[in-house]
Every structure is written in C-alpha cells, then in structure tokens.
Length: 371
Image (cartoon, rainbow, N blue to C red; front, side, top):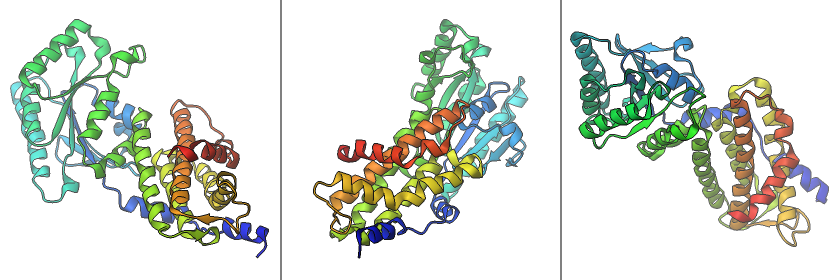
C-alpha cells in the first residue's frame, strides 16, 4: 500500500458520533450532592451561582423534597444541589428549621443507595450579621454527625477583620474540628482574603474518589480545581492506552488506540463545560479536533519518533502509546482550560482557531517527553 493511501486509512480509522459517545461517558457518572443551608439572607443562592454558574432562582426545574428543601439537578451539570429555605428569627421557626434540615439529611443518608445521600453540607453564616447563633451551632454539630460539613462565612465584605476573627473564634471553640472558609462575591474584596480555594479543596478531599471528578466538572468558576481533576482524567486514558497496546503493533492497526484518544478528547471537552454553549461550538470541536485525531496521531509520531521514516514502517509500542496519549490529553486540556477561562470572563472565543490542528500538534510536541 502506498504511503499516501496509508495516511488516508489512518485519518479515517475512527467512526465518531459525539452525542452517542458523550451519553456513554455520562451514563457512568456518579453525581455528588451538596446541601447548601443556613439562615435567611446569608447568600446561599449567590454562592451556588458563583461556583456553579447556575441561578437556582431562575432554573425552574427544582424538585421540592420538603416544604423547606428543594433539589436541583440541572441538565449538563454533574452535581445535585439541595437548597434550603433559611431559618428566621423566633424560637419556633428555628426549631422547625433544625427539625426539617437535620431530619432530611438523616433520612437521606440512612438509605442503602449512596446516590441518594447528601455527600457534603455547606453551612452558610453571613458575616454581615456579626454573630453565630445557637441555632447555627446546634445545626452544624448535628450535621457533623450525619455527613461531611463545613462552615462558609459569606458576605465578608460587610465585616471587619476583628469581627470575622470573633466569629471564627466562636466556631472554633464550639466546633474545633469543623473547617471554616471566608468568601464574598464582591469584586472589591482582595483575592488573598477569600478562601474559595480552601472551600473547594476541602469539598474535593471529603468526597469519594468516584465523585471528585463530577464535582469539579460542575464548577463554573475557580477553574484551577478543574485543572487538577482533568489531569487525573488524562491519566485514566493513559492507562487504557497502555492496555490497548500489550504488544507492539503497526500504526495501521491502531484503531483501538485512536478510539481511546477520541473518547478522551470528547470527555475533556465536556468536562470543561465548553459544549454547554451553542451547537456550533460542539460542531467545530467535532470537525476540527475529533475528525483529525487519526491525522494528528500519525503525523505527530512521524515527528516525535526518531527514525520513524514512514507511517508504514512505524510500530507503536506501549511506551509510544502512553506518551502520545498523555501529550495529546495535555494538549487538548490546555486549550480547553484557556478557552473555558476566557469564556468564564465573558470573552468571545474563536473555537476554530483555538482548537486548530497546528495548535494541538505544537502542544503535543511540548508535552510528549514530559510524561
């Protein structure tokens, strides 16, 4: 077979149906559930909107679980959120809040099906209120015996550092093992004073490994957390690539390997949430990246493997398979990260240029020998 004919064969090795493949990937996703609770007006909805990019007040797809608790599971978000009505002033109302919220978590986490559990609880206390109430302390202590719970001091822009320290001291004295994080959505607050990183790091660390990736995927902000989890995702596919090439094989027999790389690219693209945009964005990704995976694979190896000479003479062993899969994954991930960051900042992105074949291939060369 002529070299040009072999190139054409490899270019067409993969058969691809984006939606079918994505549905297969998402079918196996285990979603973490997060309870966001606290008093009235403490900024629970703002917290959710900031981190996940969803306005629970406008989604319209919440499912009431009780009179006080609503479940949200928006399409294309790999997280379940439980938003609670806050408690109001008055002993009876506070007792009802405690009974409803604690009773719900106790019932949920008492089930054998862990998919129905509340995996994390973020208890929000507004720093603007300048104090931690007995109801707060009782509810946090009770939740601590049922699930993983932390305290989020919101609206810290409305308090002085002295007032914040006093609130933290009360919490540490009464709940010494409970983590506390200071946050605000006010852009005037210096970044070094906020602890979004700490909140998300704590959340990931307190989830089972099978839930961490989905949690990171659901995030719309704080993209550094997604970056760490995306690297773990790439290593899963690197391991799969090693298994696909137990014995060295000609490049013309590398369909299974290219299929793994195609799946990885699709998974990363979806992971970064870029396909939550228009169908046009998805179409460009499929036509520019996925349709060229075989071409990128063969052309890159000719440059990266010393003495390869021609595609027909190139043999793919386990080392080559894993090194290329890693480099390809890092390349796609870097482009996705930069694109997602720009989109999160409201910038318009030319997807065709961002994911151009020459951009991907240059990044592959950058990462090929760094595995």
